Amino acid sequence: MFLAFAFLVLAAVVAVGIRERVWDNPRRYLSVSALLVGMLVLVVHARQATIDADGSDAPVLLAISADVSLSMGTIPEPATHGETGTRLERAQAVLLPLLANLASAARPAMVAVSAFTARAETILAWDDDLSLAEEIVEFVLTTGLLTEAGSDLGGALAGVVPLFESLPEAYRGEGHPKYLLLVSDGEQTASGEPAEPALAKLAELGVRVIALHVGRTDVEEGLPVYDESGEFLGFEEVSGQIFSTPNPEIMRSLAGGDGGAGLFVQVADRDAVGTIIDFIGLKTGEGRIDGTRLAAILMLWAGLLFLLLRRL
Image 1 (cartoon, helix red, strand yellow):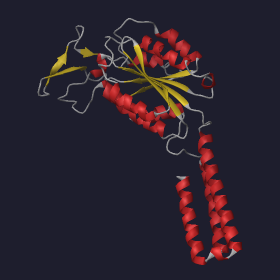
Image 2 (cartoon, helix red, strand yellow; image 1 turned 30 degrees about the vertical axis):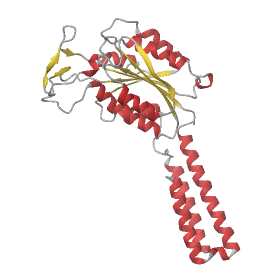
Image 3 (cartoon, one colour; image 1 turned 60 degrees about the vertical axis):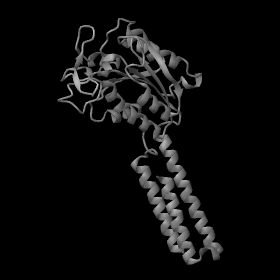
């Protein structure tokens, strides 16, 4: 915004200068040049302020671990909730704008993506190409991605630990904020490893857990069955059950509870993306500066412009 603003000011000054034949007068030429340099200094100062507002230009490290078990493909009754997608689609509706916001943030970010059912598998190792991460979230994450049945949250957490352990030494300090965004309905159907050891290791590595819960508790959700024409026939029975039961409390506990160092958020929350962005501490767009600094910059610019116009 400030760079575009500076170019507009430059164009206006040049237009006035041409009209008043500033360039024929060396004194006026030097005056205009000095004021333009001052304006550019203010723009650079404003840009630096956007970086300082985030505390550093070191990248934020965000690992996304998404549940792709069968339960993430469940939906409510289409006749009464036709606009509701699958649990995974609802999660993607939060992840995609979140990645878009990260891409437009003043502070750089690096993202890794993994998927899990009864086991976890890395899909994307650390990469600063957030558009690639968006494509993976949108097109690769599906409930048929991994063949193992069930869902194991402890295994998901353990599967992410090597991603953070593989970071270069320079990225392991406190100056590089590290987050795990765990996406699941919380329904565990596989008896795997306990979550506590992995949580302890992640905490040791300085990783804060963001538990993004998806799944409705107000209506029943099941795996839909359709005929060849796409007509809904009913819900499929899986392991003797027709409806899936989400568990928000286990997701809340993985984030450390209400008073923990992590964050629990649900995809149904009105501003789930904003809540996560605020927790990470990123400022989007070309960055934001505080009101006092902005007022000072605008006042300086106004004063310079006033002096310029008086001298012409």
